[in-house]
Length: 233
Image (cartoon, rainbow, N blue to C red; front, side, top):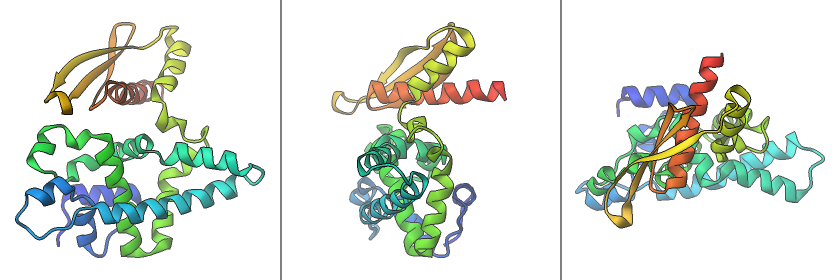
């Protein structure tokens, strides 16, 4: 199976090249696609299960070694902050994994490529794919590459609470708090997609889309924070 541009970019971002592309294909195959497809495909749910266990084990070991004096309760709290659904979804967004997802028509039209739950599951499936393709050492290297910087922050809050970080940065730089505006709603009531924009001093800095307003605000804050920090560098 040949590698397209998106896969090559993903491999570069995670620092790993796949030998068996069928693992990649399966990692991005959502159950909605399998249900609507005539092709005999398997969804990424089993890889997700595997990747979740590998991710938890590697992160646990990293925390154990990085915080030698921390008690079990503190380590558990830090691990939870690093591997919760929102944190993993944001890593998936950084890796632009949404473009690789295979979704059913309804899920695709309903904003599935930016759905935090689908993205976080796909990220776990990707870790499972790396593990099956290259073994534990390869999976560990990918996880350490993606999480090393977060380990130096306060237990991964860089991914779990972008709104708080943006608040701190904007107050320090502009003495102004961010404002969030819902500028769009689409989809049926049970599957709504909200579009939120983040403003500082009435200037647009970021936009986010998600099934929940609070998640859309977090995504808008993430984009805004990235924009602000890029201007400072």
